Amino acid sequence: MLPLLVCDDSTMARKQLIRALPPEWPVSITQASHGEEAMTAIRQGLGQVVLLDLTMPVMDGYQVLAQVREEGHACRILVVSGDIQDEARRRVAELGALDFIRKPATPEELRETLERLGLFDHQAAAEAPPPRTEADFKVGFRDALREVSNVAMGRAAALLAEELGVFIQLPVPAVNLFEASELHMALADANRGERLSAVCQGFVGEAIAGEALLLFHDSEVADIAHLLGLRPGGDEATSEMLLDLASIIIGACLAGIAEQLDIRFSQGHPQLLGQHARSIDELIHFNGARWRKTLAVEISYALEDRAVRFDLLLLFTEASVPRLTAKIQYLME
Image 1: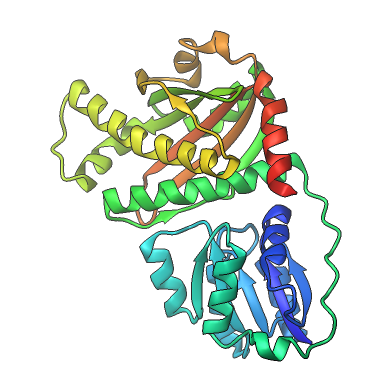
Image 2: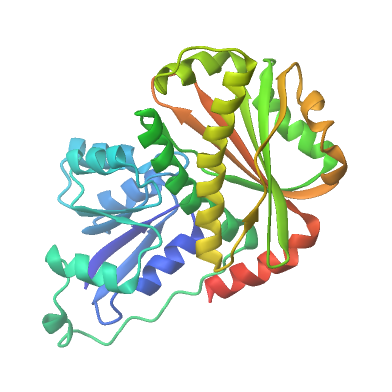
């Protein structure tokens, strides 16, 4: 049987990908949750074919591709990622990846790609041993929501990269249930002792509601304006620029989540929550009454080779959790 390695930090993503494989493909599957585990498996001969994510902790997919090339392994690597920036596709091809499939991969797309690359022959598979049995996956709610958010943030990053003309470095999203006081602590890291401006946009759909909060650091606003080809202006011009960027980032993230969960969000108009605030407390004071206990998805976009970062929080109301859980449970089945 063909040694196949599936590498992704999300249990849900690995589950979806393994389920999407041709059921008659005679492979023995090894799983890795980050790049270092993947390299260990590859060195042991367990990754003749590798399905590789890009955004992972410890060692990401780009580093795996570079390490595989450096060590001279003969494995064939297919990238399956939510980071769909054109530059991401170019970089992985340059590092030796055979192809790129965007998450979530469908069985049809995966089969076609494997056949086209000569990795799967359905005629030969008909004479192969009986189909493998599926591994027992246990996917937690946070892991699942993190993967849904990962796919959504990748789509937003692609739009942002196109708008700004730079490569966007993506994090692993964080998912936590916060009390109001804990939310303040979580936001303190985003503050970094700098003056902040923020844009807030509400959303609601099918008993799921919340607010998206996008934080901008004042020290970075001039760089953002330069990337957009704008001249530095006063508060009014800056406000318009921040609102436009927020519409791109927040809108794309919410659209990506809605598509995966098969829901439709109605979005309010983005609003400037505050400008030049000295602390997170000054910003949250405006809407603090709404944030008593919240499910928070934290995403921090960084612009490569530039000291610019966008901190995005998707804050779901406590009442939204049961419906979100049901939607994600359906997605996992």
